[in-house]
Amino acid sequence: MKVTAVIVAGGKGTRMGAGKNKVFLKMMNKEILCYTISAFENNKNTDSIVVVTAKDDIKECERLVNEYCFNKVIKITEGGETRQESVIKGLRECSGDIVLIHDGARALVTDNEINSVISDCIKYGAAAAGVKCKDTLKISLDGFIEETLDREKIYQIQTPQAFYRDDILSLHEKACIEGFSATDDCMIAEHYGVKIKISGGSYDNIKITTPDDMIIGEKILKTRSVD
Image (tube, rainbow, N blue to C red; front, side, top):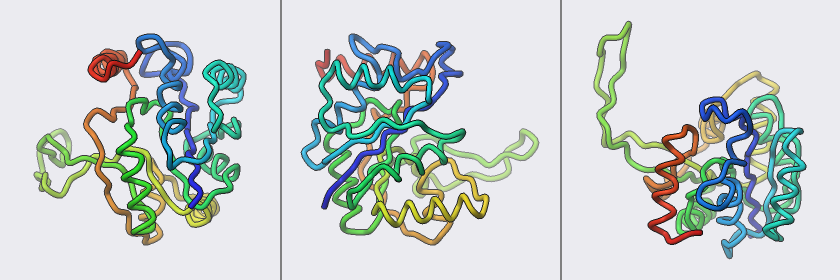
């Protein structure tokens, strides 16, 4: 099985307040995107990497790929107006059997999490990293609690999310034609009846979105002795 990671890195960094794409901010001594790409570059089961980013950020991505000698990166391509459009563009650049769709800002993903998702995708047809929700969740109407959800059944779904490339590309294109919009790739697969295995994720696999996340991310990196 040939595996390609599609790293979606086209964010504008609005909630970070950085005035630029957050994946180019540095945690400790490296850009966020470098940690993300490194996770797949060093993963023995990942054969190639496609990075999807904004048109204005392509040159900066190319610089990082060259500077850090990321040999598995086969393509840096321009994304679309939405994450969904960007994923489609990334999928079209893939040639492998399985794709791992991953957020560029999830820089703390580990080798074990990547391997777990790949293994479950091969076994079950589709998989996504996830962890059980720690908090008690409520459904609210007009600011008042209406219902408490069963925490034992609630998961926080992360990335990578793994699918057979031809299957998920076909579903993305179908969703585009039908005007169905989703917040992640699992939601598209769910919409068309695909069963997705929840693989072992990690509470450390956070999405770096706000300045507070940067502080947490650096603390996690320090515990891993990463420079």
